[in-house]
Length: 120
Image (tube, rainbow, N blue to C red; front, side, top):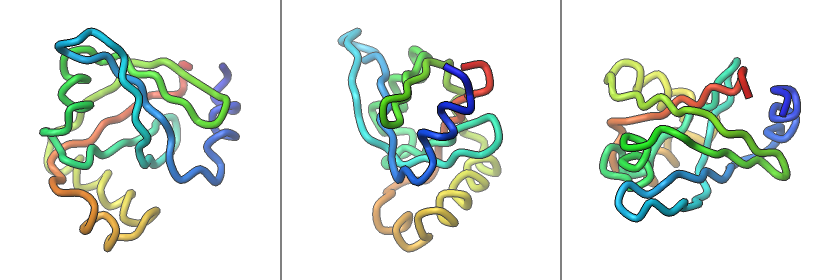
């Protein structure tokens, strides 16, 4: 898949689906998540921060599949736990979805994930 196909699929989307492999079960799980697309990367913020199961699964196996509409990519996710970088990503989410929504829906803001899309 070309990066422009993903960019087109992300236009106007409020959420995407991610698929990660369970660290214990070894089975792939799917869940909808909010995202920010900026440059050659997608950014994700786990609702429960480092305690989110899908984030903990990514720490064990960084392979992630992302689906936007009918477009899908597989990449190696990059966990972000540096407080300054996490704050930058959270600010981007606040600009897209509203800071009040972030505050009411996200219980911990101590982790984020970068998904490179340029090599997809």
